[in-house]
Length: 272
Image (cartoon, rainbow, N blue to C red; front, side):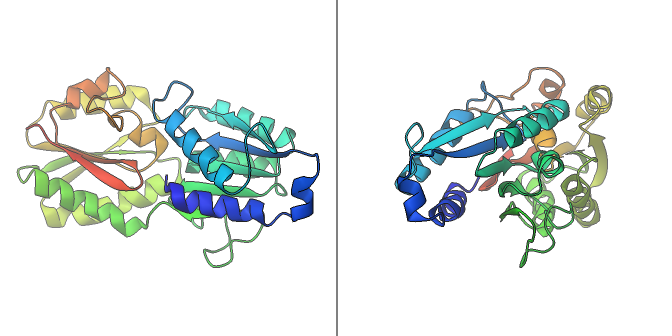
């Protein structure tokens, strides 16, 4: 999450409310829906603290003139839809949406409550906004990155592991960003001498079967596209080199890999 930009946008949105309204007794309400993570996610407290500190600098204090309602569906589609409806039912003044997976359920639940998104790769292609210049409707926010940057993952992987000739691409084929990012990787890979093996992260059985076989082959590498479903299985946490899961991902611990657990950077790890 680009915290400074995010806080600037949200703070600007809230600062636009009439000054007189701030001094009245009614407490403003903000809903927060994230597409990944959860209460036990070690990065969640840091993000929560950054949000609340930034709002406080803008004059909005949680527990004072502001109430924030958090929902963490942990990349569960059913929970995301349920939490989106819950937040809208609370009649918040604005909703913060983190991740592509949160946006569609929110827009299904409301077309009037203002929504500020972060960590969305392709809001135009996904139909969340009309255009980047004029978003329209009740939605605005920030792009995570341009699709062209997906090609850089291939270049980086080749740089850190020149012997890689086959790359498993973890992707979410149900979201526009997953499709677009994979298309770029697929187009760039041949020039780097790599064969692309797509692995759909929505199907646990496919991950177990295909990634397990791939990890045991020679000259392999991994690219995780930037979606909650693709990144969360195999990315280490910010303060650790360990995977967040211990199942199939452990099979690929020795594979060189690139993945974007944080929009500020792409982490490269190689142990072979």
